[in-house]
Length: 176
Image (cartoon, rainbow, N blue to C red; front, side, top):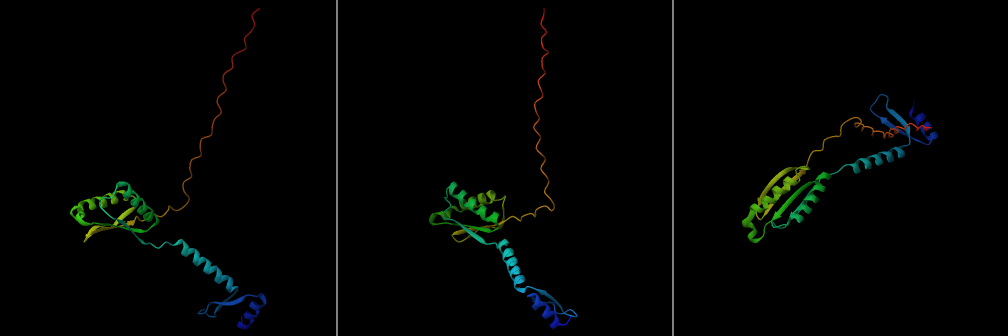
């Protein structure tokens, strides 16, 4: 079909003539609403972008190796939410003054953190000392893909059974 004829048909329909395959012989065109198609593509791109999660490195600071157990649990639970969301977490512990003599206390804390979060994380970088600071980086565990197909159906709950009727006693016969 000639281009002018196709353009005339598109104008009559109130649509656009869009070239789909310019390298084909002859070139392929389509009559369509280009604005509507472009809007649908942009909407699809926004939706796919919203579903994507960029991993971040979240930092959690522990100010002293003398941290209380409850305070440490709060920091560990916060790290758990980051890891479950797919982010990486970096713990850092800073020693001040005489605390440097007790580096083993900081290492105990980091081992405890590793054990507590072992179900949701793997160690990206084990704890290491950098001057007055010890740092450790944990990453999320790789998520296993959901099984393909339908999930197994749950068994139907058992039907309640009506109680069996009680045996009736034979009517007494009067004695005369």
